[in-house]
Length: 91
Image (cartoon, rainbow, N blue to C red):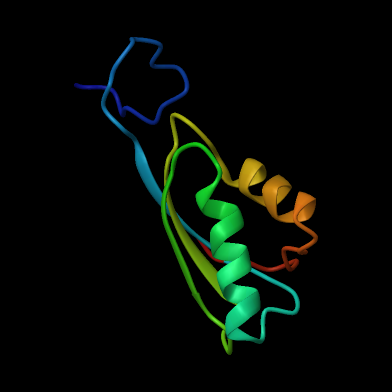
């Protein structure tokens, strides 16, 4: 049975990306310019392939390589940029 490439216990070197998508709930994400600023912050994180959001929803969807980053690192980037992830998010 092949191992899952995103499994942290699979220590074999690989160039294969482990693509994941996460929805991040954001406080105060109500205007298009704030969505764009959040998207720009997230795209600077190594491993992020795509990010987009809708102001009215307060949700930013991020597609990333789990071998290069993870959701806590995305939250850290947002906090450093002055944005607060909300307490609830779906994944």
